[in-house]
Length: 336
Image 1 (tube, rainbow, N blue to C red):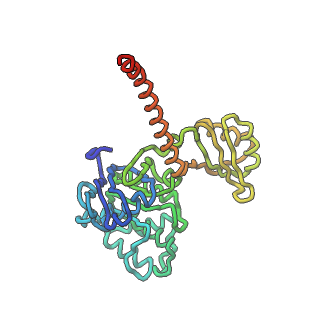
Image 2: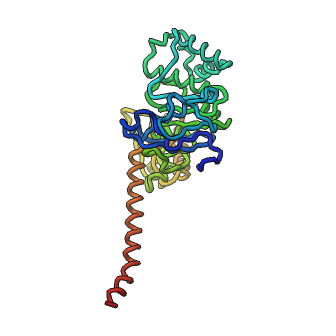
Image 3: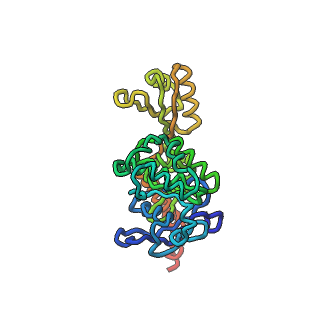
């Protein structure tokens, strides 16, 4: 996205404090409304993104804006940004209920309590904050961020990892609802699977910049030749596996009867072919498919494929150059 084209969140050569000690590259980013996933590692600067966009700390250099204003200097903008960090910074309170009451009083709406209930965690209300585990504090921090009223931006650091069990469908619905309402929703993660689970557009993030963008449905294109892989939860896996074995559109089947009895993964060259083969096999075997989820390639796999493609492009360009230079060399050599 180019600067100015419906940009909500913009970082230009932005560096957090202590970036030099961590050897972080300056961050350049421009995102508009919708649900985005920034897929990278802490070494790429991912853990600094929520701190900068959420206004937790001003940037040491460069520029950060949300709706064209600096969140570190504008409390009105900062109040419309929901952000979670890798380590939660929860306000002080005795019990969870007290924290929810205080936050909702500041916001003027009971949005935080409602979000905690939607995530299936309302039974935490009477628990003491000091007694919550790290995973539980991250889940509570997530509810606080998602309860932001009329958000301009939501920046969530690893919302699918190191967190207490919660209703992930409600979480995804809340993200997409905010994106549809015009907020810039950013899921910062090192997991391609979590990126595909929550976001609509994946931005591969490396050394402070986006190197590639792809829709969540097109992640197979990130690793040419990999095809499509689906994880299937089924009531009669043995019968389904036997039926899938006769399907020409299925390139591979994995099933661990001991560890994950009801789960299996199937691979094929394209999504439509795999889906049709699965439907036929389910009807033929009488198995009931309870859920289907795509399995995304791992980040290391994607980066290795990108490096391979870049090397192949370089070699092709070099060979073309050598072939075109050879006749000129022969002509020059013949004239001496």
